[in-house]
Image (cartoon, helix red, strand yellow):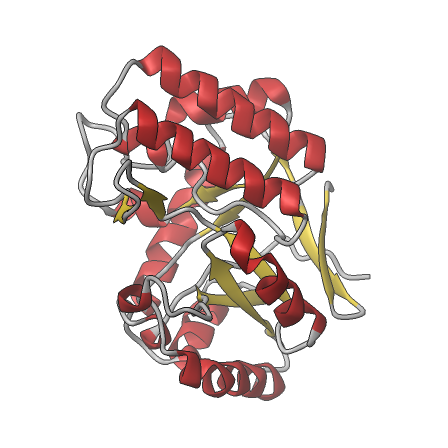
Length: 268
């Protein structure tokens, strides 16, 4: 079984609605960096069309999946996988399970982008400050996703640290809970390159956050690195940045394998 040391499993494109570039352009960008395994992970449309402004329409899913499969057939030196990035909620468990069991996709990843407010509305953690109530909503959502066993890794798990406006000690308690839960489930946590391209806050990346990854290092939880690129050019830039960033720590890096239509990870 081949273990891929040059990979990117978190990739968006024009299909996601807030990305640009055709799948073929991402394949070309990946090949320019020596990447051998490229996974497309568009934001997954939901049966009730929740969060529809940040993802493709449900009717586009088969078009996207076919396009990605055609990229895999075209490129002999690049293995291309079809996936989705999923916002977890217990009500969607059967939907995600059916998607996996259908063999339409190779893998699913989870990333928490929205939390429920006290009023019962959903709000983006990218655009709204997070208080203690929101922090608990974030933690409960992400821990539920990890424990569901549906996903191959956790995308940008430290994203909340830039949004939370409360005590740092409170935030780091949640960080430790997430890290330990992921370790117990042997679910990799992702160093995410997209946050490295956003404007810095106080001289630091919005994410990844050093304080989170020092904890990951200490707890020896498994780690993957992905670009979360939304343009072909950003794949190239952030692919280099995430490798440089990981060298700051002594992390338990794991690498993907794909066999019998199943994505897994192992240490070298």
